[in-house]
Amino acid sequence: MAAGKKRKSNLLIIIILIIAVGAVLAYLVLTGNPGLLGGTPAANQTEPTPTPNIDLVDIVIASQSIQRGTLITSDMVTTIKYPRSQMAEGVFYGNIDEVIGQKAKYDIEPTVPLTLSMVMAEDGGSLASFDIPDGMTAMSIPVSPETSVSFAPQTGDHVMVVGCMLLSDIDIDFQTRLPNNTNTTYIPVDINGVSDEVLSVILTAKGTSNAISVEPSAEGSLNYYGRYELDPSTNSYVYVTASEAQRPRLTCQTIIQDAAILKVGMFSGDVATQPAAAPTTIPESVEPTPMVGTSYADYEGSVTLILTPQDTLILNYLLLSGTKLSLALRSAGDAGVIVTDPVTLQYVMDQKNIVSPAKLPYNVEPRVDTLVYPGFNDYILIQP
Image (cartoon, rainbow, N blue to C red; front, side, top):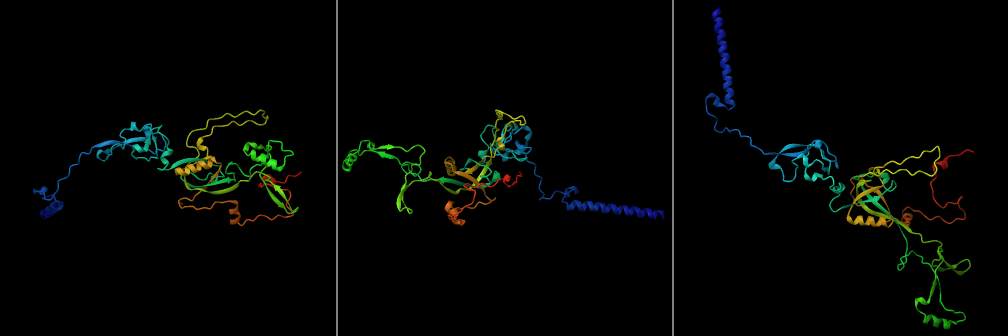
């Protein structure tokens, strides 16, 4: 009985071994390795390709973010290996020492390889010039909160430049403002008792300009050239002259339709600290406040615009001629052409339907000659 059980156990072990060996043989056949069974490799089996020996060189990359205008130090850069065959000659830096002390022209992100066009020498010119497109120029104009949309425009915004000027009529020959002054003229000879015929002969004989003497008008007098007008109340002619100098006429128009802002305020530098001038007398309860240094970067009194060379000349002429310039902020992404009409007093009167007030036999009191908005204190009732 025991012998029968032993034979069954041995038979089961043999069967398990046969199944295991069969499974191994089937795996070797299916995976294409008959050589392990004593056979030869398949004819179409490819030999593994050996790894080629690639020639690598060092290139310099940024190890951290480098802001535009920053002097590069050793802790800002590192090197990595780069295939020599893919490296263009004279593009990348191969040694960290070559970029230390250079100035970044643009913002450089980490892991970005440094090229010759991305850095410049510390004294290699201004960074602003790299932001000006080819064929364009940059020009600064003075601004204030009222002429620059309360300093809302910033670098990269687009603005419209508006110009307003005063125009006056002038004498073409004299190139002076009209009306011309009048002067008293007389003949430097004694003509008392001389008849008109004799006077005519004298004037004919002395027909040159130096035969007539000119007596200039008194300084500050309004001795302007006038004209005769018929006075309807007396039905007689009267000679009228101007009561004041000619009033110039205001006109406004768009000067630049679209200009990009390169910078608001100063580019660099600091204003030197100025000591406060001591007043002659200082009240005991008031202490003088000393002036402190002001950074150029905090000064917003100018805006630098990117313009065509011709527009640069136009703005320069207008600034020197006294034209008042102001900026109007354009919508982001709006590059359309803006067409405007010149604005004069007549244009405003017509477009806004403003009429000249009629002359009435009464008026308001007290007399108002200038318009001033009331101040806050004007609304406070001061009790006696």
